[in-house]
Length: 97
Image (cartoon, rainbow, N blue to C red):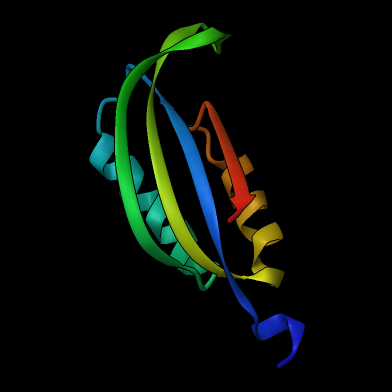
């Protein structure tokens, strides 16, 4: 089995601004990005609104989501690049499980 076809499970934690008008639309576009990187969303947890440790982009609170994602090892960098360009996100973190 080549390294390019090896899939792993990753935790993707994302923080959206509290003032996001349409969270459903933003989460759909995030899930489309995951699909575009040939990934599969295994599960999604809405952690709700929480206070941030420090203000980010003048926001004091954020809405947290945790995704479990199956993704090819070679597609993680592509997903990271796409997430960086997503202006709706305050922060994100991809961790291999």
